[in-house]
Length: 213
Image (cartoon, rainbow, N blue to C red):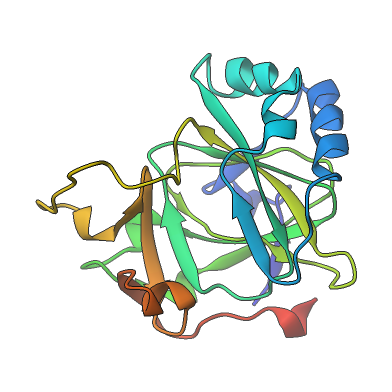
C-alpha cells in the first residue's frame, strides 16, 4: 500500500487541505495537547476544553457556515483499519503530530459491501487542518510514530456519533448500517465493533499499516 500525502492529487476525491484559519488551528493544537493519550484508541464526541475555545466559533462559521458544531478528539495508538464510517457531511481533522487516514469512497460500496482493496492511505502533517468529505469513508486515524501516538481533532455537526435516534426503525436504504446518530458503519469481521453487533460490510484484508511506518 502506498501512503500518499494529503497534498497529493490522489487526495482530491476524498477531501481537501483547509487553509486560512491558522490562528484558530494553533489554539486548537495547544488544547489538544492537554487531552488524554490512551495506549489503544479513544474517542470523545465533545471535549469541553475544545468546545469552549474561541476557535470553535471559527470552525462553526468558516468550516460549517454557521451550523452548530461539536469539537471532540480521537487519540491513541492504531495501525489497523477495522471499520469504515461515513456521515451526511464533512469531518474536519487536525493533529498535534502527523497522522494517517485510511479512506475509501461511498461509491465503492456494492450491495452493502466494500472490498478493502479499495482503501487508500493519506498522511496529514501536524498542524494541517484537513476536511474529509461526506462521501469519504473513514475511521480512527493511524499513528506515524508509536512513541508519540496521535491526538486528532474530530469536528462534526452537533450530536454526531452520539446515541441512536429514539425509536429508530430500519426501513430501507442504508438503515442497517446506522450505528449511532449521523454515523453509518461498515465493520470488518475481525473488529470489536463486529463482535458488538455492527454490520459487517468490509470484505478482504483488515489492513494493518504497521509495516509501512
